[in-house]
Image 1 (tube, rainbow, N blue to C red):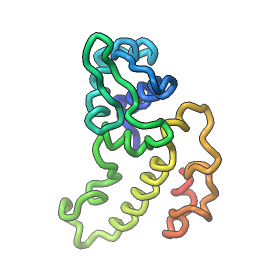
Image 2 (image 1 turned 90 degrees about the vertical axis):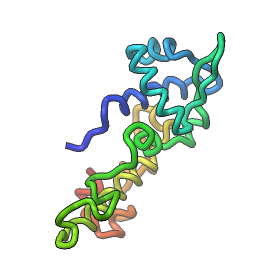
Image 3 (image 1 turned 180 degrees about the vertical axis):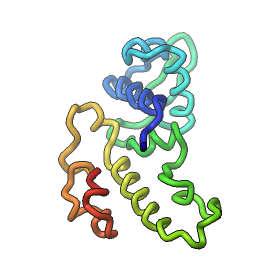
Image 4 (image 1 turned 60 degrees about the horizontal axis):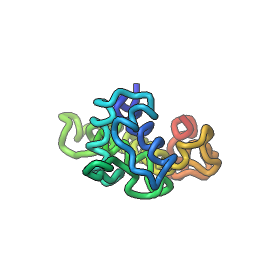
Length: 162
């Protein structure tokens, strides 16, 4: 099953809390309360988000966190990469030479194409989109397959639309 980790999901929730008040500086404890999460969990997700440049950290009595850029400029792909590392459906989607059957494998190119479709879908959804209950009409998740990069690469519509 393909699934993001709970920490990545929680990171997205924390970021949406920050996105609701983009100019405010919020403490980790305040973010935890507003997100409905435990404070240690929020502290754990804020560290990689800050390292990736998605949030700014401020020290001191009035310290806390805020988005480093507008929510519309932060993609879900950036969030996933910050929390989990580069997106890779399979090991060979990221690096050559990591599989013993690589030379005789006839599915690697297709896994890379699928990896690209998933990355494009995540890149096409911003944190600002996550503030709404419905995805944007022009997102890769709601477009008709005929007009997507997936279709132009020969990926079946059922894979591109899933």
